[in-house]
Image (cartoon, rainbow over all chains, first blue to last red; front, side, top):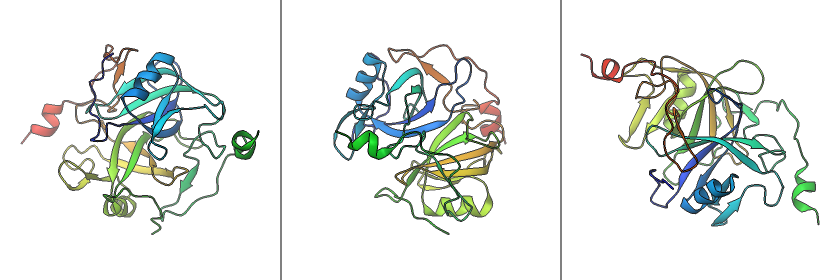
Length: 132
Length: 132
């Protein structure tokens, strides 16, 4: 597999994850932002589902492992500097651990203050992560 | 102004920049990815146009200063961890220094090899950056 990307000194590359919208240019909602290392990139390609590197837990992270909300990869892109990746995915449930469809549910005003949230969570954080 | 965000140890926060699509959830094309520090964030809010921190040139960077291809801010969002920003912008010309509308013009196959590019540049890099 080609891995001709610019990784950080920590061996990571940032990824923007967007809802897949079919043919043509990707124009879906941005769901989340996370980091991959070479291993998580290999795993993502092998399985067809997003795997990340968790910087806080310092381990490979299969998205949806706990929640069941996996991300099936549809298309992927690299940017002009080869140091950022963009993935189009089919998102199961919600991408955000808070229960929202996207991690970017909080709009801000020009002063940086939070505006009222215009959508409802798609799942309950308590039910998905704390059951059993 | 509120700046209650999680900046890196270098004082930076990453930003995803997306074409504005009007009311409702943002569903535009992802144009670029860059970093802001507090000064560039203040400048962006004061002027209504995107300013970044150039990590390579180590200076404040008004997007469009050389090319004229500015980014007028329409809406902005912070993610659930308050460590990534998402901006919806009206992009003049092209966002990418190569002349493409988006920096993410290069799709990859499952092996990470580049696929044929499906669009044309919207401006000539030579004409825009090297004239005069």
